[in-house]
Image: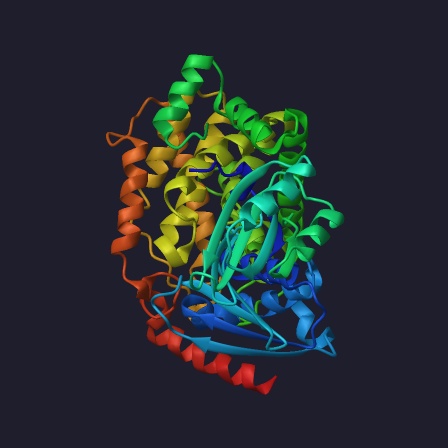
Length: 217
Length: 295
């Protein structure tokens, strides 16, 4: 088991009222923004279970929107976000699904990418699915995420690019829909790799999506 | 190597002849690659943010969305000024500071989650009230907060600190155990007494549900912060007199986790049961619904 930080229990400094439903929501939004990276004009949130039933009272809706727009968890203007945001179309749906974590959300940008995550308590979060591929990103590491056509040698190509940057890999996970089908890989790094290395991964044959996800503060 | 149980923590303290806060800051230093002084500075930032939240809460009477809450701290301050508490100044301050922080939280004000936002008033109220009344210097308050953090961290290795997962036991309950440990540290207690104080606090909140009225972090959350701040003092006092928990703390944490699993989802932050389904709560819910649709 990996050791957690002391500051997972005596932080964050945040606006209330709920670490899981407000700060966790902001951080899920921030992380989704870090993954999607592109500007967007439309965002949809599907809230599950406790997020759905008690989200209004905890400002979960405001927190998620604030996150995807890049607000930080201690920004006192989150309270008034609905009055201040213009030019972005946002919508919410509320569902019950016991197979999902009690505090769970799907975030869809411009109907192009859906990112799912859970708020697991004390403001901590976990992104567990991107466009149907399972991942496990908690924002504590800089992470390289790519999607590609499944083929032999991809792991070694990517790890070699990272190695040339003299960056240590903390963990590496792959998933795929079928043999030779679409695959995903996420690599947690001790320090971020440079843009040139990300570009090299992007130009690797059969890679069709790369994002360099910065860790959350 | 992560410390995953209180048994390991106590052993490590004894073997290295170190206090819990020393182990905590060293472990965090290893994990983050920051030096111990940087870790302590970050803890101090949290402590100062806690004091700011108390200060803001003490001077505000701004009501919450429901219009129900937001002026209880003010009532305490005015009440105690004409009729001092039976338990003295420290009791007055703990209860007032806990309410001040929890009320700041419901206004979407800036607080420190410790371990969560719903339980944000407990640890600060105990540390700050006792430090002021006993003139405990800031460096020892930081030691107290580090100790509290280590207690919460070990518990969180076994159970997620979220009402939606294990009820209020995992939020205000854990906060109370953290505060009890911080207090014993600040008063000069030893490692055994610190762990025992946390055990006693935790053992006596087992089964605490999370049933917020209308899904708001207001009823019963706000006042519960004051109650569990005082609860932490009871645990610390007993532990420092040598009273021991017969059940070791690691087994209490396991029990907390299992109790959380046995707890109905209706009582875990869904507002579908408990106080949230009382006649009064449902009436308020209807009223709120009207307010919401008027906006």
